[in-house]
Amino acid sequence: MERSEHSPEDWLRLIRNHWGGVENRNHWRRDACWREDHTRSRNRNIVGALALLRNALLAIVADHLDTYGSMPAFSEACELNPSLPLRLIRRSL
Image (tube, rainbow, N blue to C red; front, side):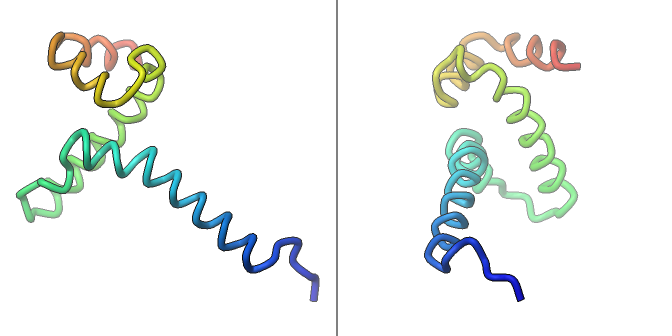
């Protein structure tokens, strides 16, 4: 049996860092900025469709976050200029 290059402590750190990144890059944006946890529907199809839309939008937004500096700043820019999200979606097609 081949010996692992990582100790159990190394694996624990790697796993925590991975899931911490997922939380910061994905879940926090969906929850804090788009209030995903406040979805009132219990219909699986609706909740699933909204989750897919949020994921697609995060992929589009990711390319433009450097311009706005943060997700809250980007959301504010979209509120002030409602045509901005549509332009970004059109560019990504």
